[in-house]
Length: 573
Ligand SMILES: [Zn+2]
Image 1 (tube, helix red, strand yellow):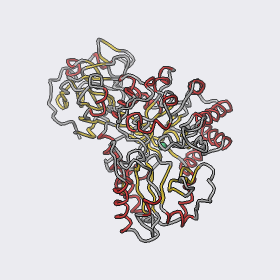
Image 2 (cartoon, helix red, strand yellow):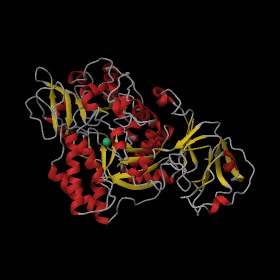
Image 3 (cartoon, helix red, strand yellow):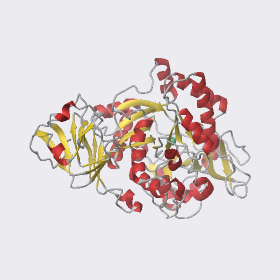
């Protein structure tokens, strides 16, 4: 696909542009590296407000693309001069162009979006009723053989109109013959009906297991909510549809192709995938249906295979590359209030400090092994206690086996303090923090209170410390729209008008960096991605408005006009 609306402009050679190395900037233009001849560009974009995220020339009017890469950046006159006979030209009519956005943490649950019962809105703030959840699941139960699981996804406990918790009694209305589960979009808690508890042999007398809880109501009865590792017992009961390998592969392909379309619709050109079917991903690419670039994060058998085979981070190409490991989980969830805090949660008795889901010695061993194998470590740690544990293990591994610029990644890295920031900096750790939460989950911050929120999703603190904070939506838990993320970073004000941790606000330019070049840095790709710089991959987004000039509370509403990946149009409004 090429850019539409193309006109051919006159071809005038600009030979000086050819020989100038990328490091030098000349006469108000960023020239191409020696291996790109910018003349007869494939595409020129002009009359634009280009926010390059390249400090050598932060703003420009135009750029040229050749061979899928940016070839030159500069004034409209300079860049138009690079057009030849076959050049497509796009008059941006003063619209804003930014580098393609990167999401550094995404579960990319395309199959769930396509095939499962969604009891909440994956992409936007929307309130639902418990009755609507029960209705949707009842319809599913009617098509499901007795004993088979009836599952609902994308539940959000603070986006319910009924203003109370979903419970076991609600789900008993779905079915008495099927085990029923409603999974919180946060991924760390689920709600079950009585049949599921009965099949799993869980009663109110069952003790909580390590790393999880069976929650009770005021009368001491099971209320339906089960947290973190306590849910493992439900994996052993009930049935779910079995697919032949071919069917399973087809579903995975369709799911990935589906979510790829969603990513580019919101301006994402690079996404760090938490695992998923790598073979299906390659097939989707081969069919031309992969619209975004993937940093693929491995775990389990796949990670073992990498270690065995000596495959390190960076293996692959510009479309599918093996990145860090997938998140190695050390504690619970932010949105579901199970993350491991050094102080008890407000108003919970008996006092509760969240769930640690791995012991320090196991974490030490895992990090050392992965680090030694030349693979970028990535741990999920939300609470200050969990972040401390990860850093302890990282420091230990780096001391035993020094490796320069290893860039261990901490996914979420939510609650920090000064000592943790110093250790993050010293170890070169890259945090990938929640992006859309400040807007989307503002209704949950009262569970933590302003004192903690001042130290949560601490973009300001990290940037001031010189730590390249990156953005990770964690989709499903958070919507992935980068502009919703940017709005929250800039305003710290949520959909409900509440502002939490205003001290962590960052500027529009900083938020742009977080969502572009810092994301590229997190996957060790800052040399080829993350800014509109000659020589880098031509991934960019055309925005209908400039986030600097719109009302900050409307940044999320700026229309994505086009998303272009490698010079090819991946989305057009
Ligand atoms: Zn995650």
